[in-house]
Image (cartoon, rainbow, N blue to C red; front, side, top):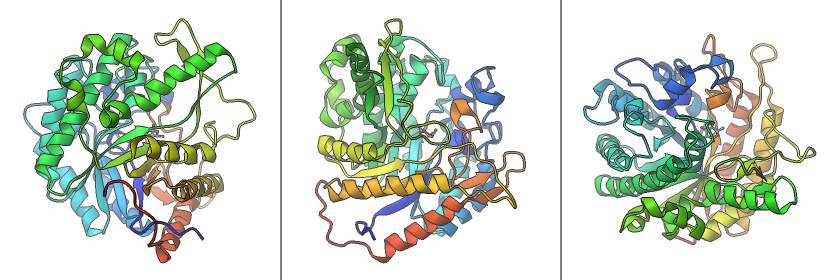
Length: 452
Ligand code: FCB
């Protein structure tokens, strides 16, 4: 049996727009994802997050389910437009009060709240002022971070600034795969830089406002492979690798953009920017699911298109490659490059499953995936990577962005008509796994790096 480091955190993750619903309730303003999901053709089946899992009303039941599984920590995001309907200016008290109730319920259940400030739901009012490509966004985000720090900092100590910087900037500003649906390379570069600056500003605010805060950022990191062995596909993979894996953590932690990016960024850089971006953080969040592939595409703004994995690669129920060794290598490589304690803030298995009988979802495929990925994480730890926690994506089946409700990642099944929750076999596996992991924690695992 694997011995896990002492105090290893076992958790589950969700995000606001994907589960909360109550989109028009209690003064919440619209976000760019409300707008996108209501435009025809952007989300499969015309699904929206209007109701989603109705977590806004059912959070007590959801916290009880978490408690039943025995997780140590719950990572959620605050919906910026719920607490600041216009994105700035007057705060919305009923929206703020919802997160008070959620946080208090978690603490009562002995579950540590991990609060992420931004999981892709920019207030639409700010989009109408240019969104992230407008440098004013740095100040908007800083003010929002201050509101959150002051309101919840007495009870919440774990903060993440952003979730998956590169996914929402790449998909939202240049590929039209996510909100706000732009296809503009200059907007993409500006969004990258301003989001980096916003991260730095929020780190400083959280540090100043919340005594004992443990602050990190959540990066999607995964190997980018060329679709074929041609020079063009190799170059495409290098470009995507830079934009996907490095363009946020490098400036935030190492204080630099890669030379090629720095050159393109030149028009948007101001003196002192790198020092504003590169602020000390306490941990490094990694979301990882699979390897990704790139191929050359001279017609696209950055010269690459999404590639196909080779046909013989094993895949999940939604066709994502299964490659646990790539997860192990990503953890080791991220530790070696950034030297910050790592928390795996998302990992999980997507599928189109339906309950078979008596509401039972016997998701053995998910259990097999989770076991292999958790084993790969143990290998990374044994190889010296300072990994301190693991959050499964996701607690609940939810609104999976462009795939709507079709792609299910939950360890708890949600019937999107009745909103009934039914734990899947994987939630029972996770419960047993956590209980076993806590029976025999290792005490002598070396702890290089800073304390988290
Ligand atoms: C990640 C997102 C998360 C969810 C999973 C499947 O990219 O952070 O919201 O969609 O993928």
